[in-house]
Amino acid sequence: MLKKTVKLLRGSVRVRAQSVYPERVLNLCSARGIEFWDLKWLSASELSFCLGRGDLRALRRAAEGIGAEISVESTAGAPFFLARFRRRYALLAGGALCCALLLVNSLFIWDFEVTGNETVPTETILHALSEQGVHRGTFVYSFKSQDICNRVLPELNDLCWLAVNVRGCRAYVQVRERVRAPERANESVPTNVVAKRAGLVTRVRALDGEKKVLPGTSVQEGQLLIAGVVETGGTEKPSVTTRFLAGKGEVWARTWYELSVRIPLSYEQKTYTGGEKRRFSLLWGENRLKIGAKGSSICHGDCDKIKNQTPWSLFGLVSLPITWETETYLPYETVTVTRSRAAAETIGEEVLKAQLAALLDKDALVLSASAHMRHFDKKAYRLEIDLKPALDEQMLDKRLLSDFEKRANSDYRNVLGALLPQKLIDTFVDRSGIPPHEKVHDITRAQRETIRTLLKRWTVDIAAPMPVENAIITSGGVKVGEIDPKTMASKKVGGLYFAGEMIDVDAYTGGYNLQIAWATGKAAGEAAADALLAEQGAY
Image 1 (tube, helix red, strand yellow):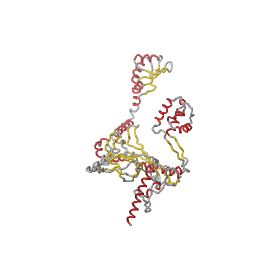
Image 2 (tube, rainbow, N blue to C red):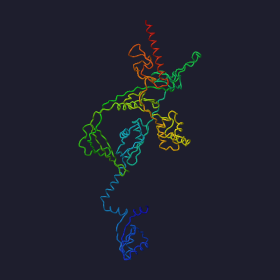
Image 3 (cartoon, rainbow, N blue to C red):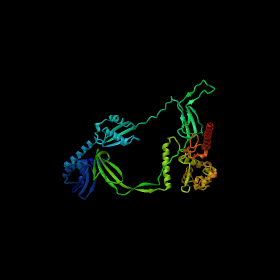
Image 4 (tube, rainbow, N blue to C red):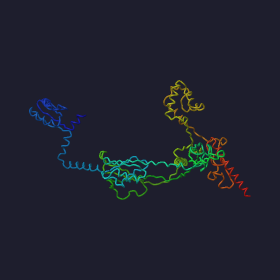
């Protein structure tokens, strides 16, 4: 490869030698140290071969002494290629001009690359740089990176650092976004921790202060959870004063959100008419040259506009100050489309899930997105249960391999005893499709993957609800918005109080519904008694 490159740079010549004794030409080359290659005998008195460009003159002088005739058949290499342009002055001038233009072009910025931004749009950064004189067509040495940083950062409050580095015709803009420091609480001021919204307390941890609620307590919005005022003395130590603390702590609770969204069954949908149109423009720096455009707009109705810009470059190495822009116009018409009720419910569910995720903090956990299953005649419900939640699929596969290796000669059904409850084993074997008495060492990889899939995604189809006689709690009742949360009194009818399952509140099993019944019953009873005593006192 190296020899070929050297020969290409030095140039080579294929010559034809005619002589009564052509072999004398070869002996002459050897005697004079002339290197030759690719020898071909053309006839008894003719042969051709290749030699270096510099050895051609020496070969001709030597061939005259033996009466041989040397003629050139072809040439190759850089010297002969460049010699073709020796008298083409216009072409040489054009090449020199192109080189000069490329040199001048490299002194200006024609492209930008912004990195490091996540929330601040790239267009905002480029607009701020343009306001300070750094844009397409800017002379490379007309600004300093530090000066640009000092002028741009005051305009972009979300950035804390900016640098502009120019390499060739491209400006590399590196930024760092500002990380806002969290607001620090003033711990010298006594405070209390109160409930942000109503819920059922599951855990309380007081770090500074005194907890006022216990797990299982149903609380209302604004109710005191952790007090910053602590009575340290009491009746036994009356000399000890009350302490005022910065109430701090952590409170976990289950809370309920009632969200609604309206999904119309009829809506407007775009239908493209197919009359696609394009407009082309040539961008030179900050200038625009429209090509084939007769008016300001080629789409007079409703249409979507798609813009695509392609920067030009020289062999992908040097950026040119030219960008080809294509604008595509897609005309459309709006038609009224009707969706099914099931499709509207699916869309509404996704929208509500997104709204719920936006309302919750990042550490909050959604236990259930719905507590109801209705419309069994229209929808099919399926539960997907993870029988091994503590193991991911990779760890579970290792567990299966370990169990199968330890009991390689056991029946497949007997090995499942370490993985599943006894009542579930027969159903699991039937659904896996593996014979129960299959030896473990005969189970294939595909069968093991089936076992792993069933353990991680065990499905149960819900056919219908159980009869009401088997129900633990009931759903529905008086809306909570129509009840005073402090007294359980009706907002519509005076002297009417509600408690327990009369209210449209239902929770999960585990004592929570009993707690709701006790808490609302106590509040309703006390409020009703106080109202009765106040009425009797008035008489």
